[in-house]
Image (cartoon, rainbow, N blue to C red; front, side, top):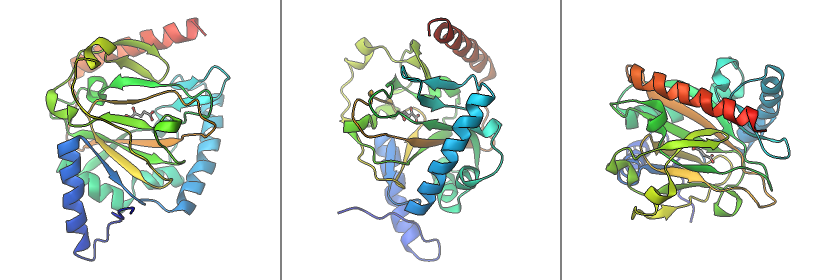
Length: 264
Ligand SMILES: O=C(O)CCC(=O)C(=O)O
């Protein structure tokens, strides 16, 4: 039976449900929250995603990555040019912010909004990685919210997690040369790890929240079903990344983007 973790702040159910969310998040490195958004809300988001993709192409967003058949696979940094509308409203949604605030133990601030579109047949993989290898928050007070805009599971390239891997520190990463994820954990490192691999099964409107150091990724989407996710990244309001490490990281991202555009 589907567990409904819809939060109601006016009743005691919030605390009961919230402690489960917190337990899963800290024990496993991720948590599934069902029905956070309604089907109608997801339909509005999907319409807006179509518009944002068009804008992103028009302004030549450098953080836009295409599949081999020229469909949009990922778009990053959407919050830099999208200032209003349904997606921005979702990033400020009270239910979501309450969950994040309780997990981060601080007021949350949006740091990035992205689409991981992963279209049917040609959607690209996202190699194993830990977000904090990219973000460089030494206090680890940052996380990603992944909202399913389609059904998502192992069969259409759904996100997978290495359960509990956030407790084992940052792993060695190497430049991935993969569109949309600049670094990856090499497979020879992954093969030595003993964590259980979990593929959450999601319906549109369900939400994943994952710890910034849990190892995760997704496979190609060779199925005939699209797998679109809206990703909102939050940090604790006062948290700052290590600026020196972040500078080095950004240089590498540029290198990756140049490599990809020269090898299209
Ligand atoms: O959607 C995907 O395939 C990967 C998402 C991801 O890496 C993330 O949300 O941090």
